[in-house]
Length: 267
Image 1 (tube, rainbow, N blue to C red):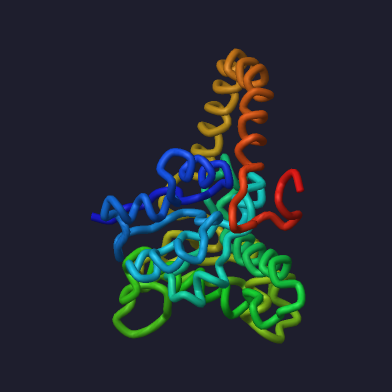
Image 2 (cartoon, rainbow, N blue to C red; image 1 turned 30 degrees about the horizontal axis):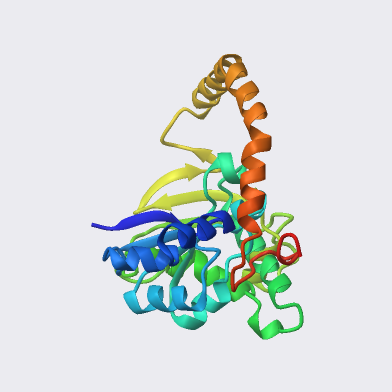
């Protein structure tokens, strides 16, 4: 059975792990025998070189969610170091509550451009278009444990294909298809989606559900929740200063790594 879990998403989590157990979260998981080829750690931002070594040696994988990580101010995951170590890395979006959408094209672009901040004068270490395209295709298939079925258009692979309109504003003029898909495409040009040989999107419309009905029901649920959650929001606002103070205290604790672009908090 596979194991999927959030892993060292925030600095606070990593600090608390050392306070409670005297070791990193990855080391703690290793103690319990949870690391292995079926292990997937989402986010995996605040990892040390030793953590990456443990993951790589175990054949574990990481789901990289750059948009969510930036949206929540968690930091920038050391994806280049993961790849250099041989850790399997796939690309994800996280949920709408954390990243606003599930637009994988947006995740492609963010994954690439945010890597330049970590290595501003080492362009060879940037996650260029080809690299992040590999994360979203073959890398993600490997993370899912389906490297033989997904991630490429090839004989005996599942017919999972996304077709885009080649005459869209995002793909014209076209010089390098991969760069255009990573840096310019927004998903607006998606025309047809085939999953295991079955057409599920045609001419931009989902064929398997009634989209209009789902949109209406979702809006009704949102309106209902907004009306019912006033007390919860009021409580959250009262608690926020205390939670923030606890987090600020935790993030000032020393760690040998820094995943914030602005440097260590309080420095």
